[in-house]
Image (cartoon, rainbow, N blue to C red; front, side, top):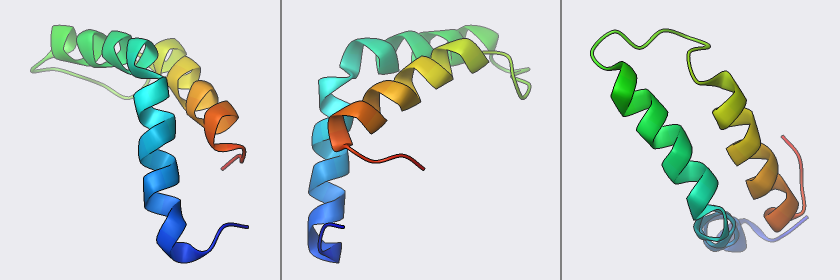
Length: 60
């Protein structure tokens, strides 16, 4: 496990590396405004989450 002070930069790097997936998820959410409901963009969220997990090297 990484020391606590390294977790945020590690997560930030993982998020940046998955920018295309994050952008697709954000576009879906924004397209559903103002009536976003749980599960509306679930497939895109899971793709983004799994990408970040691969880059960071841990699952949550």
